[in-house]
Amino acid sequence: MQIKVLGPGCVKCRMLEKNTEEALKELGIDAEVEHVTDFKEITNYGVFATPGLVVNGKVKLAGKLASKEEIKKLLSA
Figure 1 (tube, rainbow, N blue to C red):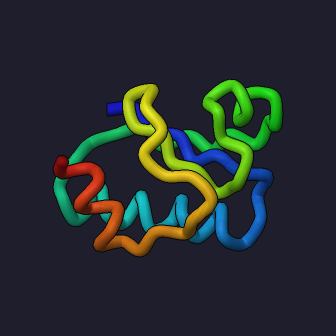
Figure 2 (tube, rainbow, N blue to C red):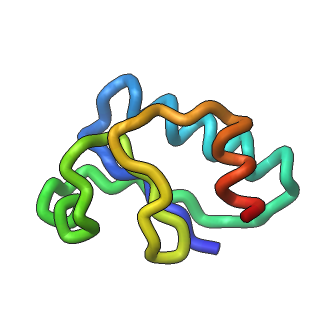
C-alpha cells in the first residue's frame, strides 16, 4: 500500500500524516507514507485544498484533517 499526504507542511498536513501513521500502526498495515509538498504534484491529483490523502493513487480525502478513526475507516474500505 502506498500512501501520500498532500500539503505544504502546515500544521493540519503534519497532523494528517501523524494520524495516518498511527492508524496504519493500529491496523497492522505495513505501508509507505510519503509527504508531498510540491504544489504541481498536488494539483496533478486534482487536489486544490489541502491537506489531502492519496491511497494507492486514488484521492480519498481533500481539504480536511481526518481523525485517526476516519483514516482507519478509509484504509479498511
